[in-house]
Length: 124
Image (spheres, rainbow, N blue to C red):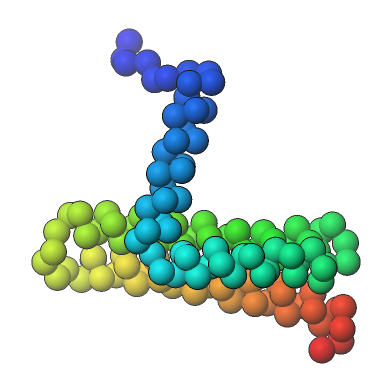
């Protein structure tokens, strides 16, 4: 049998610590992440006001959270590529570009959802 990992509450506690370290690293190292967190200070209350149903409110907040998730994953890809080496390589550039494209698509989705909910509410 192989080495057994941590279990139960200890595993959950450790996982929470790793997540906190990840949030701290994203906050320290990524201006885009800081901007998106600060945007959330406006967007989450706005979502609660703009959404007329629980589902609309959930979709509005969920799209903001999705942007945050994709930004963190993009940062992880960039850190991994940078860790591998400094030399220019087409696949390194492609990996970073793909991460940026994922962030962009999550922002487009957010704009579409917010625009749709605003249109239904105000006919804007």
